[in-house]
Length: 220
Image 1 (cartoon, rainbow, N blue to C red):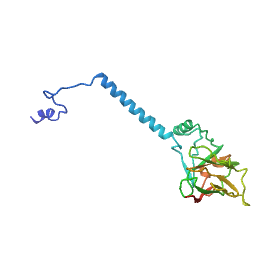
Image 2: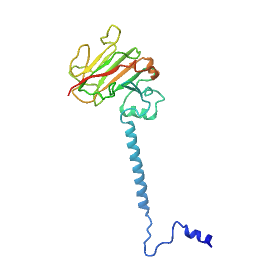
Image 3: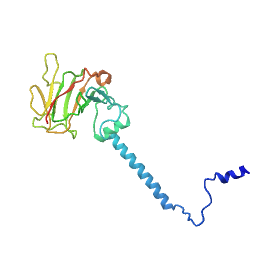
Image 4: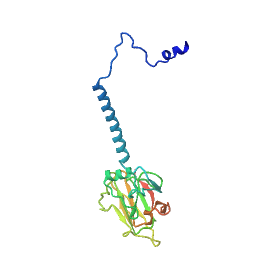
């Protein structure tokens, strides 16, 4: 007798309640729901793709002192997101064996680089046949200043007797190697190594061989 009652006791749907109208979704409503679902899914997919490819490479990042490097950004084995960033920005990264790009948006203390502050960059670099150091503004363009210079190369630096160097990056003029800051805003240093053993693998980089980025003082 108990077994006979089981189907009725555990039924998930009972009979319709008298007086309550039963409505079925129309074909138009079902089609609208499907379209709405696809629109939401597409919007989420596009927004997440934009977020992943808008800015720095999302994967393969290696930090060395104040500098960040993506050793595989120019490799044939670069991940799809890295390739998407290159396509979006129009960047042509240095290939493996050609060179290496290092980016610094902070100083050695982890503080964001600011045009109101003065910095000292140096004295050592990884082994390379040639290298350049360029200062970029917040829009990602080389700085435009009255000095008419946005960077230095290894071929034009003044060096000390031990082969080291020091570049002062500031608004106020300085003796020696001086790179003028823009009037205001965050800045970024880009350090490019050409024909360097470090381009084969980031293991050749360590804190002792990359230039230090030392903050000296800041204007109020």
